[in-house]
Amino acid sequence: MALAGKHILLIIGGGIAAYKSLELIRRLQDQGASVSPVLTRAGEEFVTPLSVSALAGRAVHRDLFDLTSEAEMGHIQLSRSADLVVVAPATADLMAKMAQGLANDLASTLLLATDTRVLVAPAMNVRMWEHAATQRNIERLRGDGIEFVGPNEGNMACGEFGPGRMAEPDEIVVAIAAHFNPERVGKGALTGRRILVTSGPTHEPIDPVRYIANRSSGAQGSALARALRDQGADVVFITGPAEVRPPEGVEVVAVESALEMEAAVQAALPVDVGVFAAAVADWRVASASDRKLKKSKDGLPVLEFAENPDILKAVSQMGAGRPPLVVGFAAETNDVVENATAKRLRKGCDWIVANDVSPATGIMGGRENAVVLISEQGAEAWPRMGKDEVAVRLTQRIAEALEA
Ligand code: CTP
Image 1 (tube, rainbow, N blue to C red):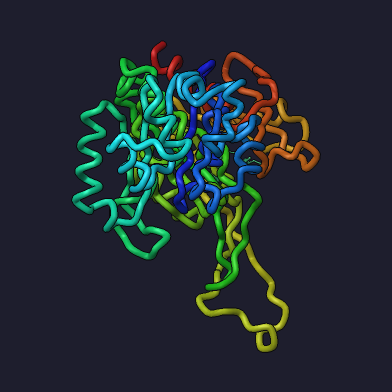
Image 2 (cartoon, protein in one colour):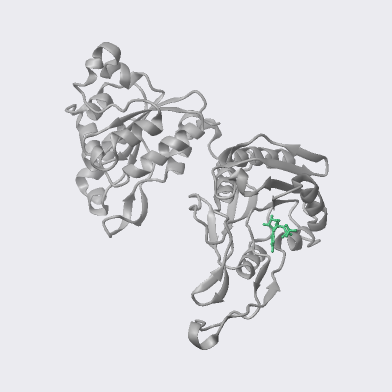
């Protein structure tokens, strides 16, 4: 946990990106940080004080004069109690106030009163970002020692395209971790390693509008790609149509079917490590129709299946050019260790990360996972933990294996 014991004062400004700050609170906590939230008046238009305080697990500060908790904790103390002040989203208005040294509400007063370092994640319309006044303010703030993360370029809520989108929560967490550990930036345990991760379900077409899918959300694969990236790996992330978005800062190859995933994996080789977290469909419809099947005309359809290529097995057994470490996953509903041990031998991979996906566990599609790591050395059961934590642990093991 990169932020264990750190206390973050999070100022949430008034922008549409404020909703991402809720996710940011979660991610900071996942990394061991505690968060004191401050919500500006404009921020309250976008997220409610209740959701912010519920997620942070402590009261949200909203009003300068409300700090009649002056008795308890005045704005000076509040602004200095943190290890880092983070402004996300930082609006053009808030940055202009910071640059001018204005202190006419709680957020700007805290920012003026603090002697703690400040990290700013700007979010605004493209034109506002590019305006000479904003750029001038940024120059000044940089000169004052304020750190920045983002903004990113992309489609904006206002319908325009360009720079101005707030950095993703993940990126902000990486920037915060980099602030506390500058010596580790670019020097993760996996720097220079090329690692392939497959993730998500596959969709096997029946006809142009229908497909066969499975319940994989892609959460574990995404978490893995993120953890590997955080250790400096160059990650090729080959993902089926997942619910969970891929992390920033990885090379994303989006595919639909098992056949497409296989082609993308072959194209990504050679790699130092292959991690196969995708829930690949074992079968595809043998002759998917290229026109929509009609209810009345075509009668009840009879689908014939063909077996999909086993991507993990093919890579594990490819001989020359085989990645030095190949990691498979096994989703089992019973006799987890026995089945997964046999699966490791059958497929020829080095490790199998096995989990019990029987409905009672709530693991498939959930936030937690309970896995058994199976290798030549035997089976090692890990306690139930968040999928992010499984990813971090597995990343650590991968780094150790490559060093050995
Ligand atoms: N896998 C793959 N290509 C396939 C099927 C599975 O790469 N066509 C990979 C998965 O990404 C996972 C591992 O193989 O890493 C285990 O998949 P699973 O479907 O659980 O194993 P199966 O071989 O299908 O075994 P069984 O049907 O007996 O559970």
